[in-house]
Image (cartoon, rainbow over all chains, first blue to last red; front, side, top):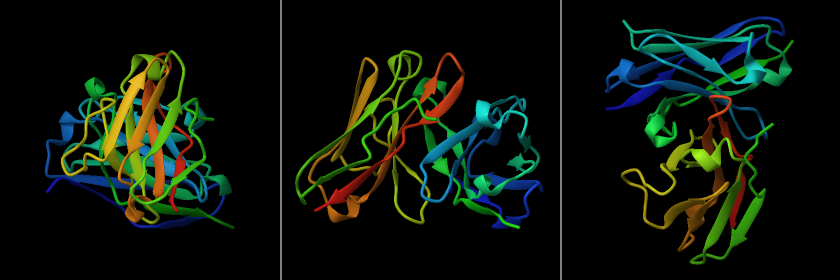
Amino acid sequence: QVQLVQSGAEVKKPGASVKVSCKASGFSFSSYFMHWVRQAPGQGLEWMGIINTSDGGTRYAQKFQGRVIMTRDTSTSTVYMEVSSVRSEDTAVYYCARDLGAAAGHAFDIWGQGTMVTVSS
Amino acid sequence: QSTLTQPPSVSAAPGQRVTISCSGISSNIANNFVSWYQLLPGTAPKLLIFDDNKRPSGIPGRFSGSRSGTSATLDITGLQTGDEAEYYCATWDSSLSTGGFGGGTKVTVL
């Protein structure tokens, strides 16, 4: 079935980097853009960026420019999201989500199960 | 900081109706479709509405959406206890070429 399966929980010290993976199955990977969204404890959903799985092009929220890198591996139908120089404010659940397309206002129809990233010294 | 504004909370009795508003600006809601998501504790968000008013397969007709100008709304009729959740609107910003969510609305069934 159509699904996105993310990597497991991570615990990082401040200043480290964390890389989360999201493996797609059940659909044509390169036909859909993918997004990353996070939710910090007690906070709302926050859009982080989008990756074109066909050519690897990316677009990030201004807040994450220079600190987040999104990549993809078409051979394994996997997208990755790496955050560098993490700080306590990056403690959150990180989700990948499939994009329904620009014609649908970039709605997110399929979501990964979420990956908890905890930043603590 | 989100440019989409939602009320923090709404509430109603079982069987009643709630309406959640989502207010934006010309570069986002006025020129792009809006989608809505339900977030239950400990679970991933679920798409309820896309293209302003379309429902994915499996979403009951009690959930409906609309958009006009720089605002959008989500209506939930025949409210059930299982509808207690947070609801988020989302859209694209044509000027920034970025996505964004509203701040979320907590629905309480009295």
